[in-house]
Image (cartoon, rainbow, N blue to C red; front, top):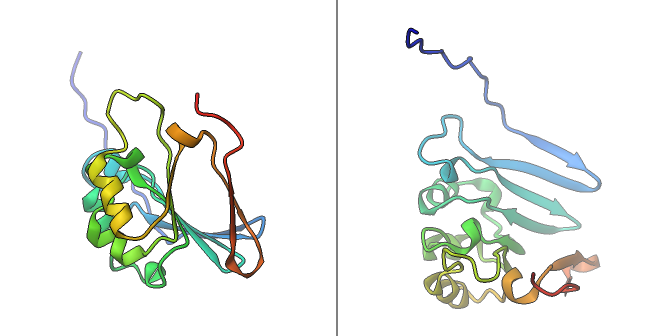
Length: 161
């Protein structure tokens, strides 16, 4: 058999903004020409409702965070940060946390995971940034309700599994 190489289809990249059930969703990443690891090509969303902003960072690492630093959409900071890459040491750089200024950080991470996530250095950087942090390995399911006036109600209705 021959070794044929297939050409990737041409794609057009356009900024994505969508409204869904009262939320404005903006795709901030990947960029028009994503490169690097699969983690670096993670989908990053900025979700806004009732004056509250949540940054959902997928598994981006420091290089992806660096690309986001100039994003005008992040200039106002965020209320809720879903911490990237389960709190891996390769994410949540201090410069990024200073730029986005999260009021609350949530780390989605399995209890007793083999990777040792979240990393102690990430937890220290979140503390230095003044972001109260919730972890699903300790709290189980984390539910953040957005109330009027920008206030947040946080509950943890389920124990970790």
